[in-house]
Amino acid sequence: MRRIEADIKNEKGPLNRFFSDCVGAGRAGEMLRKTAVDQMEEVQKGCGFRYLRFHGLFAEDMGVYQKDEQGNAVYNWQYVDQAYDAILDSGMKPFVELSFMPHDMASGTQEVFWWKANVTPPIAMDDWYDLVHAFTIHVTERYGEDEVKSWRFEVWNEPNHPAFFSEGLKEYLELYDAAVRGVKDVCEMYLVGGPATAGCAWIPEFLEHCRENKVPVDFVTTHTYGVRGDFDQDGKKILYLMEEKDCIRDSVKAVYDQVKKSAFPDIPIYFTEWSASYSSRDAIHDHYIEASYILYHLKQVEGYVDAMSYWTFTDVFEEVGIGPEPFHGGFGLMNLQSYKKPAYHAYWMLNQLGKTELKQEDSDCYVCKNEDGDIQILWWEYELPKQDACNNEYFKRELPLQSSDKIKICLKNLAMGDYHVSLFQTGYGVHDAYTEYLHRNKTVLTRNEENQIREKTQETPVSENTVSVSDNGIFEMELSMRKYDCFLLLLKKMKS
Image (cartoon, rainbow, N blue to C red):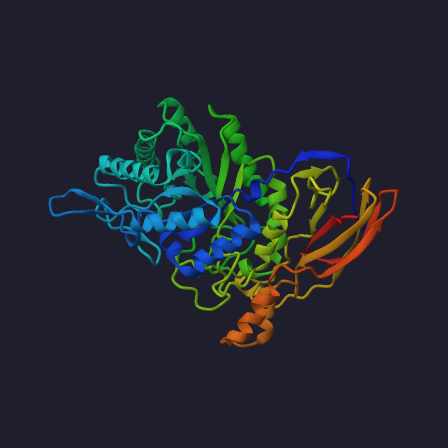
């Protein structure tokens, strides 16, 4: 029998909330959509994310840059303001990704995505500097220097991948240097970093360049995913989860070691994209297994990274076009119909944890408390799925599971009195929108049926009761688990 035991007086220290530092979205233009904005507010409220990062700030659909008939730059920040206002109104802050290249500034025509992002360098690097500088001046004037000091400016997205940048490391470093000057010339205290690479690449080279040329760097960014390969622009690749169970930890720790050996050993490390899969058409994103996948890997990388930004919070996401059906393997924590996927519930559970973590021996568990004496216990069971088919076959079907084992919870030194006990769960058939959708066995749902599924994915407990803790201060509970189940147990001290 699995056991989780903790002494309420035996504190580990403040809970490391790196998991809720940042979350991703597709592109800036999508943040002008009502569904995306509504979901952004819902996700921030439920999951507590502090920053939001997206592509395409300078893409054509944002209208930020054109040249007039005389060849002069014309800037337009109207849509940028709407996107950033929405982020700030939600309670989050921008993690500014400076990308992609405005068409009137671009040196070539190479594009990526359904929405045609130009991925070539500027014709003149001075124009790129001017754009970044003008943008930084504008957000400073609109939001104030003190506010923008709390933002983060990241230069480009995955420049090591030919789909996202037509040139190589040398040209990216030139792009980075000009962008850093564009930001820092407005305020030296603004935070800028990179290289925002796919697959943890270029970290030593990037940091050595900054050291040798005395170029400012305030943080390091890169990306990692749990499937092999590098990009799925058409959403048609045959993908499998990596066979190495600890693949995410190994990637994160490798970057951590590289930074520690560099001239900048103490700068923050932000993984500005991560997930089980880099494809926005991978069924694992919708599946109940994704919740335990998230919790398992996040707990493993604690201490090696300052942020793990889940890609993404919403299925309002159009890199390969509009999602063709409610569940199409989209990255989002919520789908287009605003069903909360099991992945959402994983982050929601994390957000319920109190500020102080307690010592305990189970590696797949958190035990925490808050200042009111309430206790939160979050645990899960994850193992590599025994796939007999690729992701888009294996995770596209119903996968019922039997009980795995019993688990016993034992807490010591609780204050005597009555506690309201709430148990939350996500797993097969429980807060499991995709399985609920499969049970409908239809491609077109009525609005009433959509509302029913949406209601079943809300954050409701699977059981509630009241228990009395005697003067011995002991609370015990035993229950059954299944593989990939995630549980959150809340003990709230009732006022006498």
